[in-house]
Length: 176
Image 1 (cartoon, rainbow, N blue to C red):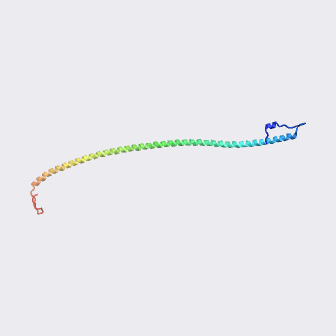
Image 2: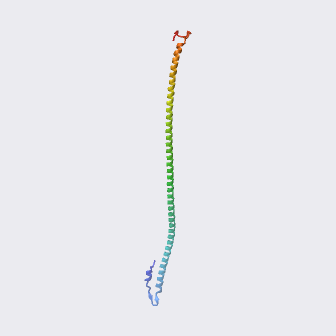
Image 3: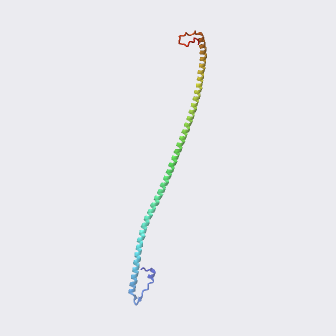
């Protein structure tokens, strides 16, 4: 039972001949004291509850600050990791491109070397074939000359040689 300040101000105590009626005053004072006690308890309860809420709010604010700090740190770490990953990826791509250029360059160089080797071998083959033909032609000329020389010599020698004696092993034909 709570009494408002306005009710207290409007309380009309009955008067007696020599002042106020004692019972009325005591009853109103008891009522006021009881109301004041109730208000005092409510105020203390509210102060305690306010303190509890303030402490809880402080914990929540600390947790929020820590979460914000953690979030900022995590975002920075993620940014750093992304930047590092991007730089690493770019480095890997650059190295791969350089390696590819080196491989392609080596392949072109090897292709040119093989092409020159093929040209050199083809030239050697043409040279060998020309020499071989020349040697065959020279050998043929030598054989022709030999046959021409020996053919005349054989014909001359055959005419100059006496007939060979028949040893009886022949076919009976004394001339050849």
